[in-house]
Length: 66
Image (cartoon, rainbow, N blue to C red):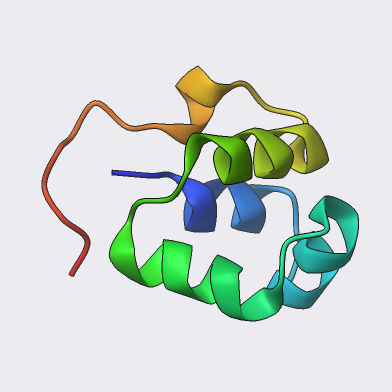
């Protein structure tokens, strides 16, 4: 499971703002938040934009997002 929504909210970023910072489309970011998974290359780009590590991005909880 990914912590994207939490990390994004902690930094006060909208999906649009994160899209602009990361170069990842808004639709892809919305899908990641809904599904709770993504490609590692996408995760890396998002982490660089958020200033976090992959460990921060991934949660220990493996329960799918509701």
